[in-house]
Image (cartoon, rainbow, N blue to C red; front, side, top):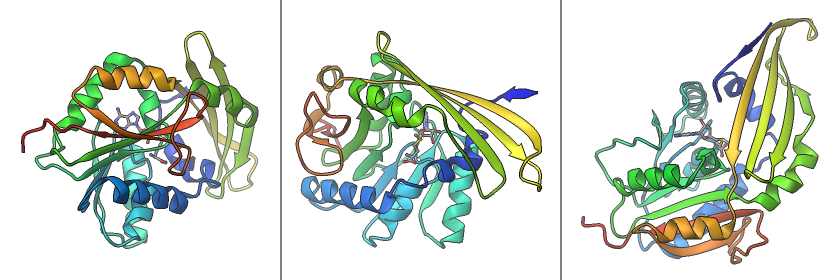
Length: 261
Ligand SMILES: C[S@@+](CC[C@H](N)C(=O)[O-])C[C@H]1O[C@@H](n2cnc3c(N)ncnc32)[C@H](O)[C@@H]1O
């Protein structure tokens, strides 16, 4: 029997295996480059939707940041805590929903990567998140986040759909991926089986349905224009080239200059 689970519960068990080809050190170098270009004296970083904290752990290795990493999912946060402990990293970890941030300090940098914002289903939710992020910013703070575009979803189906693997910690996963171009919704369904020691017998079976809304560059810019945030830059992929309407992943850099400290 398959048990349907909320997103990022069972997936937490295999998240790092699913992401094994993602080079977070390179991603951290890119984020560090963006930070150094746009902030005069960056020290504190708040990561939102950190997952298992791979980005924050890579940023910490750079040796110049004081990092707090957060995620809404209890299971992902727990994995992040275990990973940070194993690596003897000195990042703080907290379970926080980015739609309801209550922290009594501001940060120089607020960052969220790897499509996490695409879990916000519409303009209203993005505006809600921006309002929450504003609470932990000062006039120099940067809000850096990426999002994926319809073009990315159309291309990604080829390698995401029917992806399967067996992980070292005894799970098998199978992913179905489809894109609804009319609604701009990307669906990923994970079937995750916990295997017995023989590596074949299925002990338990879980399903997680992930629904992400993708946004064009213009749609995201229009949402930003409705807010007090100002777009400092928008980058294509993982270097300092400007984003265009053809970009697959766009990293936005925003500031909120009118915030009173
Ligand atoms: C694709 S994963 C990216 C994780 C991580 N940023 C990385 O690079 O591996 C999306 C993450 O967003 C988190 N997430 C989704 N909605 C969230 C919310 N409202 N508040 C905080 N985290 C959220 C999920 O729990 C998940 O860990």
